[in-house]
Amino acid sequence: MSSIEDKIKGAANQVAGKIKENIGRATDNPTLEGEGVAQNLKGKAQETKGDVKDAVKSSIDKI
Image 1 (cartoon, rainbow, N blue to C red):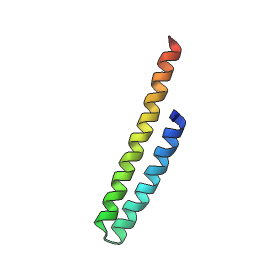
Image 2 (cartoon, rainbow, N blue to C red):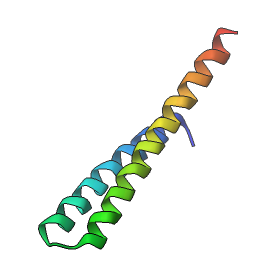
Image 3 (spheres, one colour):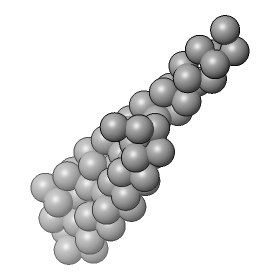
């Protein structure tokens, strides 16, 4: 997967996670809220993975 794909999927997971988290809070559903938090964190990790790929590629290109 390319760094751009990682970043896009990460952003999508963050948005979906925030939505789940907010719906869980609004409906007093701690399970759904927890799933949202987890999905949001997964999205942040995916974006970070994309950033790392970009940094590695940039470093390699400079060599």
